[in-house]
Length: 207
Image (cartoon, rainbow, N blue to C red; front, side):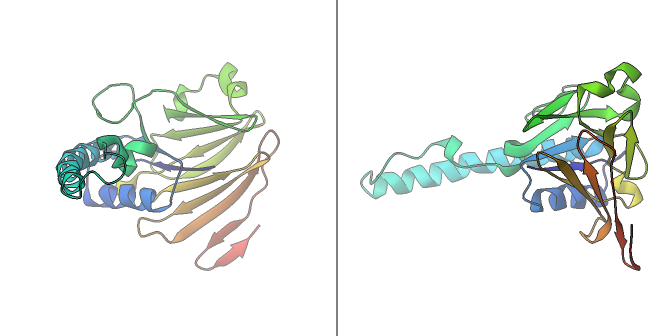
């Protein structure tokens, strides 16, 4: 399963670029922190409006073609961000996106949980998930604490791009991108155990 996490403290052109880049990674889930959730919600609302217009065109074409095949439905015209995006926030100001202050994904036997910032994770909660994902930080980072992994998405306004997390039953491969999609750093975390990692940047790689 591929999860992408993006964050920004304020709405800006770079944050909008990062949201678009997150969707381009073909994720099964996007966790949107901070202002990226507001940007995504506005985009979804716009695309839903366009979908209604597209539906009328498709329905009219179906009628003109003498009802060939099953009738079209609005639900059949997907809005990609709405299909995969979750706003990780305390408030409900990001409709029509789904919103949760603790978003959960189950990958095999492993639970992945996203929270608005790492300070929300109480010491006795680390065992609740094999992988935690959080926003609320200037820089993207990976941490290991009490045998569990934490991936923090950095602030797009400060030149952080998406955190792309490919999850398997045994590990999480984490790639941090810049706002243009270039690889900045890569880590491989063993789920349920101590992480191992390699770092790859423009100047080379080391582990």
